[in-house]
Length: 431
Image (cartoon, rainbow, N blue to C red; front, side, top):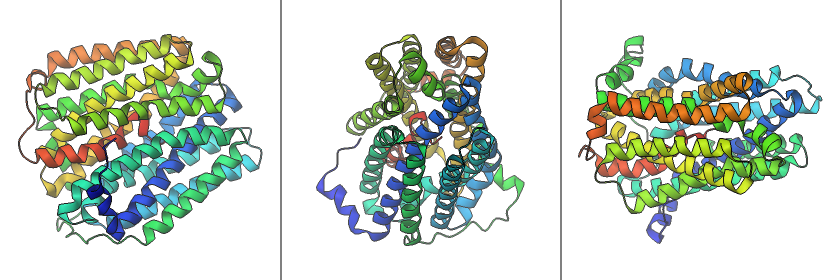
């Protein structure tokens, strides 16, 4: 988490940024609290590991279908209004979950239907959220805005699951009620936010333009290698989907313990962000990326083998740290090599590979847990992550041998990583 100084806090004098920051923090708190309640409630109702995986699949399908058009929308439409609409949909989802729980729900398919709607909103919200910050503050205040936004977001991601777990002791109705109230406040704050109007792309909306970001990524092997490495690492290392089962059946803790488990990767990511902000990577960046993914795999194996809560928390912290190193390298590569005119579309492609793979990884984890059992599935995911790391080191030699980042936009990209990369990490991902 970046260390904040008086100049960094001075960026709060910009009203639109302050409103956006408050909306973002409330929204992140709400989503993280909701993630704990949904996972625990579904596992209480069905006791099915596969159903925990279906939580991810329900969000993956709309996300992967909508994210590329959402990237073009972020380049053409008012980003603030896109975010406001997505928050309003999230509010609707929380109210539906509240209503289903109030009706003494004994089946889970209505919850999956709500998660499909939630996944669609997340698809449109992610590219717009990644691109809007520069429209809310003057250029000279951008780095400070990124640092403060990153710090506040990490606090919300760490505190949200713990609060959700504590509130769940009073029942899921309490959690969904508080989530709805927080999201309502977030919507109101965004309605008062008015960013600098950007010149919309004059290109006609077409399938070709939507796919421009995809073509751009595939034309650059180093960027493709970095993005696809993260994809498969997250795909096979989706142990976080199984946290409700691990909490109840392996560690034998309640919803508060589940909240601590869900917060632990965010703690690791936040600490790593602080270190990288103070000492940015300068040399051997390719090896650092592979090392981060390898650490993620080793920590996943340790988590699967643990039956002691403190050890499990430490393993999850290391998973978050390893993931953040790879996110850091990937985000700088994407930002430094992408023209601004297609930045939204390329961010959407990155979201397809990384953001959607979080949900698909959850489904994979639930499926393998249903086949092989809970602990073997987690161990298998860690081993598969290490195998992918070795294969990609052999297949993408230029990435492995990369010593320094591209010079273009290096400083800006380093700053943006602390604020944007975390949104795509598993620890920060909404469920």
